[in-house]
Length: 364
Image (cartoon, rainbow, N blue to C red; front, top):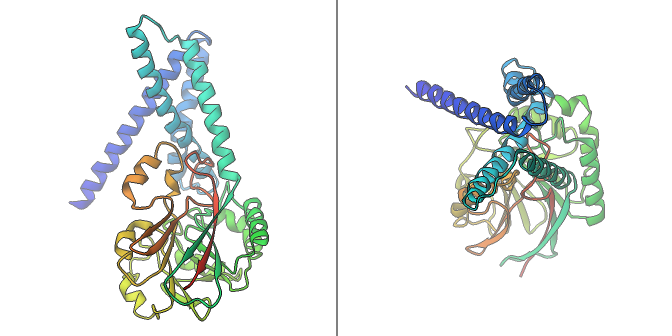
């Protein structure tokens, strides 16, 4: 019965999506009609629907990376197309009340400016990382403050690779953290492009005095294989494991719930940890923050949300998660959720710039 429900849900979403694609085409066709011939519109219509379904076809045909990733670029323009279509429709109805007409030419111009502007912003924010710094104090003894660099959601793959890893290496060299933590989603679903472009060589340049550590995320689907692969770079995977960064600070890394069904409950994981010391929990998905704020941890590092990645999805993630982005102190515990150093799917970010967190932890 559950299989039938899944099939019905899939078909429903697919039909809804294709209806939206069709409506977008009708809107674009209306705007283009005064400027191009019917034959050209026919060709554009065919290309439009191929582009709209390219990643789906590539996935079904098992073409893999990079073809599926190229097709994913469409979804950025699909979402922004829906947004500008709604804006134009509302504007047209409002202007009609005042006997003004929103012509096809003006509508096409507004659409073009909007999409070009969002593209420029999206590319800049995706590929121009910023550094965010926060100093926090815990009510435990720490002989010497410790500085942790935290990144998440690298999504190494077709659109994100050696160039951005070199930028990360440069940031680390300038900031000089004591330790580095990668909070999940190292790969963009598979390791095809990671291996093809030899990203491991660049990733291995990441270094810090107290080590480089990583947990898996929901897009690290071949989790065990990825654990083995990144171990070759000198990065220490924490797969429901803990490690002493110093005599006073313990780092605890959880398996991700999406790729590791057998992961320990946080309470069970902490049973083997001396929580009288400053305890830093790395949990890729920040879905249990309210619960974790009642447990004997001091700091949590997460990613996953991308803060929605593409506007206006951030309004959804803000409702879903207690902390979908940034820093918050809850029940005297410190929580961080990164918008990600990289991105999933389309190479654009319009809700938050790519970022690296530098977190300095001081004791009493």
